[in-house]
Image (cartoon, rainbow over all chains, first blue to last red; front, side, top):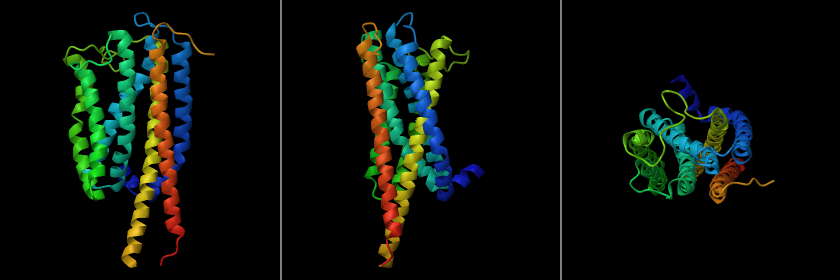
Length: 244
Length: 50
């Protein structure tokens, strides 16, 4: 709670994020470049799927970040809803765009991986595919809902409620392959009995996922800093208009 | 040097290219917005109150 309160102060947030951004950016650039190089040049063809398994290097981190980003947005929304910390609303709003972007990457790369592997781009009765598509629509709906509100307070409130209710979709996505019959394979990394993947595939995948996580964090911080500045500019303009 | 893949090569390139396009677009748009926000606030803060 003390940490939350500390970052609720915009000045402290701006100073902290300014110091953190170069490290996040550098880490993301190194790790993502490494994972792409591994994915395109180093990984051997997979025993059953051949070269198409190289798509995993971009698809899996995107899938994790689409869910992780959503949980981040839902938690920030909860913090705003309970404690009314302005910076939590700024964080939730900023995460939505990048979460939607990573969900789009997950859906698109999944489709181009599915076509040569399963013989279909998308299966409408597959719980995993449809639940991820639903999450993409929730992200887009969240962004549209906020934009449709005429005050910032209304946008924050409506957005927070949608984000918190929509969080129910995250465990549905995660466990969909265990509960329902699915074309999609079962979890092969985040499993109770450990990853079921050869280390030569697992290492670049995990490092790539870390790189994309750092990139996500960096982009969210840049977007949050812009939003804080825009809100400060709006407040200045309002004060001047009131004084004029 | 361009790597050679089996018959799934076009799907692999499509996946990597789409990801690069989305992420590149997001990065460019985010920094452009950040730059506009910084300029807007700086202009307001340096402008004298009337």
